[in-house]
Image (cartoon, rainbow, N blue to C red):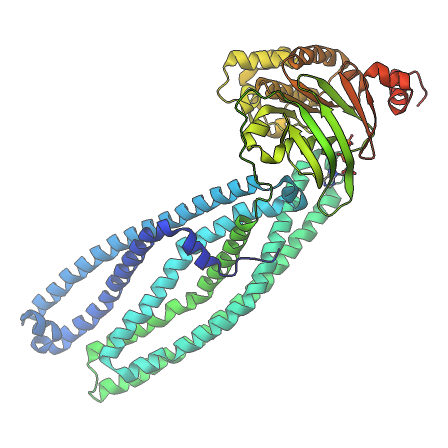
Length: 592
Ligand SMILES: Nc1ncnc2c1ncn2[C@@H]1O[C@H](COP(=O)(O)OP(=O)(O)OP(=O)(O)O)[C@@H](O)[C@H]1O
């Protein structure tokens, strides 16, 4: 995905204006710390000056103390004070920078996650889950590293140059020039290097997203891998993706490692200049010995931190790229905006599709000119061969997708005009592939109504023919359901999902193959409960097993995205069309 935010850090600065106060404070503390950090070097110079010049030293001039011992004592006291300031400011700066990084990291992650969950389902389906996960996780962490390690280091390096520059300038501008000669080389080199690294880090990111996507998909499909003894093949496939990641990283590392020797050479040149030229000036009597020793130390202090510039640029580059990706995610428009209509009275649950044409992304239409009405309080079934468009139709009712043409109406209002809670809040939905969250059985049943009492949870479980097996579980309603409910059987999962939908007492119950995995006896019990529940709500059922739907008020037979026929079970059997043929196959009256 090409980044759409071109100045990500400026955009971040704009976005998080409320952190600016803390940022300024962190900068102030880092500055104080750096100043305190430079002072000990000056004190060394002063100490040499005291030892060499005694009563004529700089300290003697300032304090009016002649004894060398007393002067050294004063220097020690100042050193102690500086040490206290340095330690305290370092602590404060550290806490502030890290707090800032953690604060922004947290807010950005939550914002990005929240935005992602409001994005169109089609957006999620059209890209690997690993890529979204990598943005929400790795990218946000990378930004945090840039903020809590990279930024303070950049600042310290800049302050270093300024402060040491000031000391040099005060001592000898010629020496300052020599000591500073390497800096432009390093900076220009760094910029060139940064430009080279940018595409390399993009490759690393793409590779890491591929890798986490592949790992996630494989772990989700571990049972299939085992069943097909595909472990070796999958290991090789992961090895290929991992090797691509390794190679992308190696390429980036090779470039970044090449930079450090260049910086070292430049530093050595600056250091040698100060050593030689400063030494000559001291021998010639143009430079105080104390100052010479300070400058030799200072050159080290000035230049060595610049070796870190490579690492800092590395962090900056990665952080910048990560920020761009997070902001790009945040810039994806929520193109299925909710309406604002909230019906005042109770929702009846009447569903109507008028001339609906629908499809996915740029693909062909999967539903064609569909007209269908489910009056409030009735139970209607949608049946038809696989791929006929049954689930696609339900997705329109829930507004996971919008039709390309035509309208979907709930109680006469276009679903596009309804607020989410008015639309989805009125619907109890059981998807074809049930998703349970890791938590207790009760948590899962009460997912749509977290305030439900235990009695209500139990009643819903009863209606979904789940109570009996739940009570037999160790812990009953407090039994822990593993991630995606893997500790339950398929039929048990479906019944929990059904209980979850029923507990909402929805105006509209939408069931997509909700009982496909339960046995006939359990299904009969569920049908009975559903008929009771159906007295209070409208129900749309998609089912392959026709016994599930034979009592429906109306059965819609879809074929190739169109309504092939519709009527009650008896009418359709009497018509002797597609439904009757299917019925005969399922009841064993016809040979398959
Ligand atoms: N998320 C999707 N993205 C793209 N195409 C899709 C998507 N979901 C379904 N389709 C396509 O839409 C068509 C209808 O699929 P749909 O799932 O609605 O059929 P169905 O009648 O529910 O089938 P089944 O009985 O197998 O569940 C199929 O051709 C399918 O390939």
